Amino acid sequence: MGGENRISRILVVVVLFVVSMSSVLAFSAASTSSTECAVIGVGVLGTSLCRQILESPNCKDWKVTGITKTANRHDQILQQVLGGTNEATGRFTLETADQQSKQQPQKKYKHCVFCAPPSGFEDYPAAVEEAIANVWA
Image 1 (cartoon, rainbow, N blue to C red):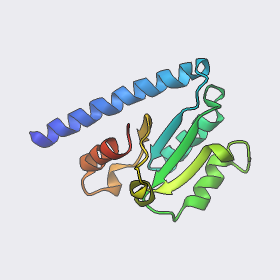
Image 2 (spheres, helix red, strand yellow):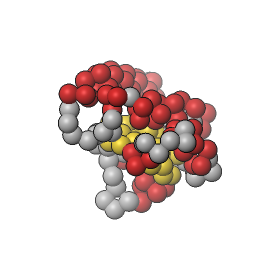
Image 3 (spheres, rainbow, N blue to C red):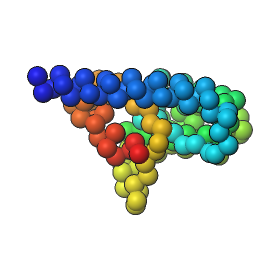
Image 4 (cartoon, helix red, strand yellow):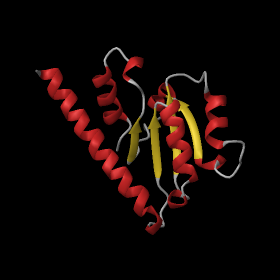
């Protein structure tokens, strides 16, 4: 029962974040301040999300940090997200989870999306909880 309860809490957080993120994307044009977002798990879904945020006219001031397990695909991800354009180059960075966790102080983000699939983790709920504790402000 404890595991089911933990997953339920995580799902509630994810749903609340998606609703919150949708509102932010819809109304961010009214804000003049720069906003930062972390995307954890920059595979197919995460790459698409990064590109959409950077291309959205409502998010023209946003900076996006993609967080991956390894740097193996960073060149490919950069090409897919930026698409050969330099327009968003200064607004998108990639780092590994190790690099992110070793920053002093560790950077936290007000907006954080967990896009990594369950297949990449032995304990998926723990991975989501770790992201919430260590990346989400």
